[in-house]
Image (cartoon, rainbow, N blue to C red; front, side, top):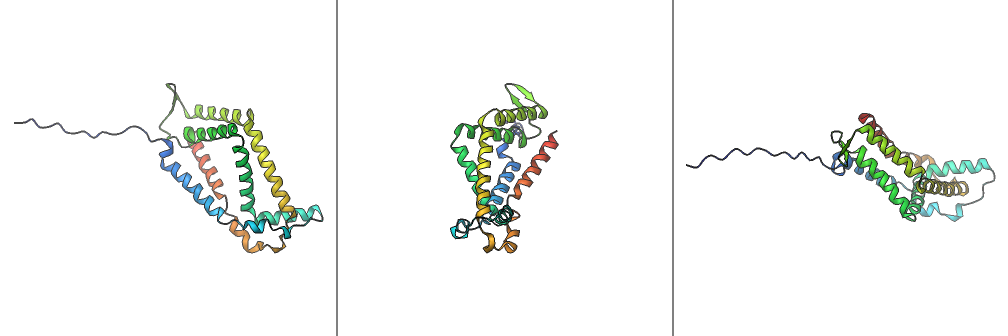
Amino acid sequence: MAAPSPPILPISNSQAAPPIATPAFRSFINKISDTVRNGLSQRRPWAELADRSAFSKPESMSEASLRLRKNYAYFRVNYLAVIAAILAFSLVSHPFSLLLLVGLLASWIFLYLFRPADQPLVIFGRSFTDMETLGILVLFSVVVVFLTSVGSLLISALMVGAVVVGAHGSFRVPEDLFLDEQEPATTGFLSFLGGAATNVAATTAARV
């Protein structure tokens, strides 16, 4: 008579999922992509933005300021897209700065923000607490932003974008724009930044 086979014990996989596979990270990416797609769908026609017949020199600084406020309220999405394009072009034309910035963002995302709280960071056999990880990332951020060309490149690109937006908003005559009807449609654009900032702050507070 054959001996009964021993019972099969369930085997649990104790290996934690990588941060990129966590539901929180996927939800964060989906929220950003959906909100950006919704925001870009609210952009004004580019032909309307570049209508040369609507440009004229402002008679005073107050008139230029008024035009800029009205045009920004109407072309907000287009202006942000222009600034983003200038920023992207600046980074692509400086690959080393782009790699540093991508590495910095990836470090924050995978080593702190979306790393499971019960999974300590281990480097070369040494385990780091959340506070030590946060200190290392802050120090790394200071080095990348202030001691390399990344900080000056970002500031320069943003300044160029601000000049382009300011010049267009000051010289574009906004009388043909339906601001009262269209302005509420743009107020939600990039609202994911506030939500992302809230999520990051909550994650940081929970870890600290």
